[in-house]
Length: 251
Length: 353
Image 1: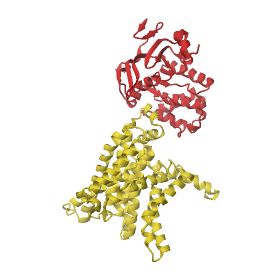
Image 2: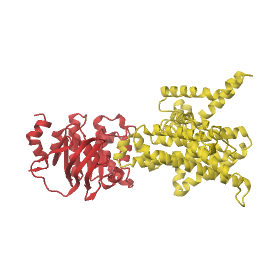
Image 3: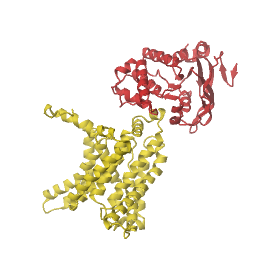
Image 4: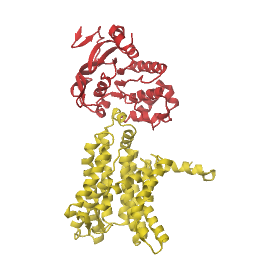
């Protein structure tokens, strides 16, 4: 079964669609980063987007979250057309983006970072509750709540970045390389928490270089190659496919 | 303006109460200092620089954008308010005593200057603030120079000779009233959710955007506010100096304000105030010092205006070596001073520490 040039493996468990991306194209000046990719994330689903450097993973995420304007295509969130909307309009609709390289506010304390994550919300009491929820997810952050974020380790910073994204109470969480530059054990912890967050009904679109971990977590996965979707399929089946094993798992 | 008393007041009164207090205090000071002409002149100069520094701090400090064309906006305010005042020089608002009518017209002139500068700020800021990084610095630098060159070559603005005959209606009272308003607005911005967005933009623009901060919108807004007060400062300036000419609004003036903001600590309103006061009084202090040293020979004292720039530069280099975050860093005097005082010794450890 193929869909355009995309090789599609296995059957996808049907779900109510949350995010639908159709023929998305992104260019930076004359350089075309994405040549029309189509993907979707269902309600409560974890979807992984894997691929090598420069394949367009981050571009896809940035276009979905409104950080870059798409050159073409359509993005729908919970049935509403949100193509070209800026993040300040997407965040209230339930989309949160933890950008590549964490991008936490290094000069502010852990708690202040979380408060800024809830920037568009006006329900103070609930915000405090959500901050406590984040602290329960990552107890190490609770110990450091008054500490300046710059003094956190790489793993703690990544935990903070994820927590901050959760503070806007998203229905869809976009994560850009949460495993970047982290020790394997820390990565294990973070992925375990992501599973837990997903269990609470948050859909996740995950961009990763670490294909093994990402596909193991994901319900569904897409493989991106030079701006085009090469493969799609349930996480386990992609993991088992010889092409993926050869290209991304070094076998 | 204690935090505790502010909380018990209704929302609308929170801005009004300190303003009324300031009006009364200023009226008293005006009554005491009014007749002292040199003092009024010098304090007006200080006041104008405080307005410039505090307003530039909203952009350079709180928002983390780098504007180096504040003198341009000041010039717009000075010239347009000057033209307005020249046009209504002979006018008297019917039924009002002459002094009151003059002051109302001055207020109108200041409004004209401020709004014109704010409009320029919007036009300059909108295209350049959409971009990230150093574009704003380049564009504001260009804007400042364009304004100066245009003024220099426009006959109706007096060309290089400058605009003279603007009624000298400014007073100690008017200048410091605006200083107060500027500081009040700056502090209110810092403490509001608007201030939080600016804070986020300063710390990490990409992250701020990802969290849903309308980065361009907030940057443009803070730039417009900053330009408005630069225009007000220019308007006030035009109404107490005998003549305004393009030489008063050069790049050097812009840099002077930047130095004040950096020296006071980027993001610190009180720091900007302290630095503006010190750096305005410094040349005057040098003047009287050189006069005393030189005795009959006054040539050194006359050169103060040329000597002060290298001294500013030296001060800035020293500051960057010793205290790169500026006087108060991003914090305010009341956050920092109690700590400094308590470090001086246990004797000073009061209830604040």
